[in-house]
Length: 101
Image 1 (cartoon, one colour):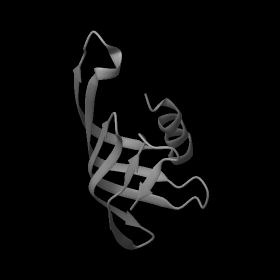
Image 2 (image 1 turned 90 degrees about the horizontal axis):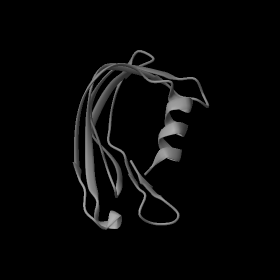
Image 3 (image 1 turned 90 degrees about the vertical axis):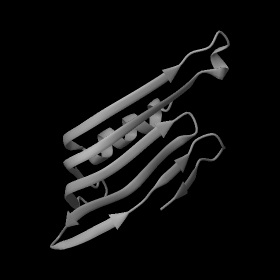
């Protein structure tokens, strides 16, 4: 459903590391009623910002994806000798998408 966002994030951030994934899908006869959620628990992951090439490593936290968008839950990471804590949400049910975080 959010193929464009997923491909862009994967290409831009070049993620690596270990994750636990929990996926739930609820299918209905009428496809518009289908519901799903994917929970990704980050464990010592790494990304590199595509524009500025800033590395973030030692990432831990939780990402959730459902038919409304993406939400991060308390992401921790190390960066350039410092520590980062953040949350992020992308609501994809509106046009244009709404970003917060």
